[in-house]
Structure formats: C-alpha cells, structure tokens
Image: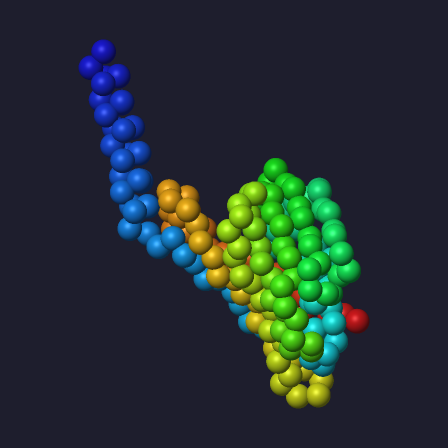
Length: 173
C-alpha cells in the first residue's frame, strides 16, 4: 500500500511541476523561416498567394497526406478560407486578410476550433530580376497549460522544411 502512495505522490508532484513550469513559459510564440529562390519575385508571389498550393510544400501536409480540406471563396483574394481536419496534425482554418500585390500575403490561422487569430504572412522580396527571398512566419498564442509544448516542439523546423519544398517546386519549373 505504501508503494501506491509513493507512486501517487510522485505522479501528483510531476503534474504540479509541469503546471508550475507552464506558468513561467511564455504564452506567445513566433516562428518562421526565410529562403532564397532562383525565380523572379512575381512568379514566387503568384504561387504563394494561392492557399491551395500550400499543400504542395507545407510540412504539415507531408505529415498527413489524408488531411480533409475545404476551400471557400476565390483563392488568392482577401477572405479566401482554407479549413482542414486531421487526426495527425490537428484541425484549423486559415483566412487571407490582406494582400500587398507582388509583395506580401497576410493570413489569420485558427487552430483546433479556437477563435483566437494567429497572424501569419508570406513576404516576397526581389534579390534581382531572376531571384527572390521568401519569408514565411507566424505569431500567436498558446493557452495555459498547453504553452509548455513550446519547450518540446520547434515550429521553425516545419517552416524551414516547407520553404525547402517550395524552393524545389519552383526551381524545378
């Protein structure tokens, strides 16, 4: 019986420790990556402004090729919405909120039914007439105690992989 008490106290202690650490860990996050692509900025922008193309290069679609996808509106325009459901990578919604033609696409991401928008963007900048850089980033919040996940998961790696995939796709054509 004493052993069960010790196991219970250890389990409660671990849970308390996790909850205390989650109080200290920031509830906001920033992730993203930048890459150079050997294509003119207008070609790169014309590809990334279309959210339907994201499944071709984003790392999350690669993790679950069976994502249930739903699109609403005219792709590449403000208000276009991409919703997904996945047992592997979670559910969410992405809405184009602003477009600076040829330069920047701003979107709001909503994860797992949350009403809290996480701003995301693609910024395409010309290097010269035949190459450009792409910056893909997100800022957001994670509610307590789920914010502790930021200690275990580096979202930057997913953005790096996604941009590497984008580079391969665009430079192949």
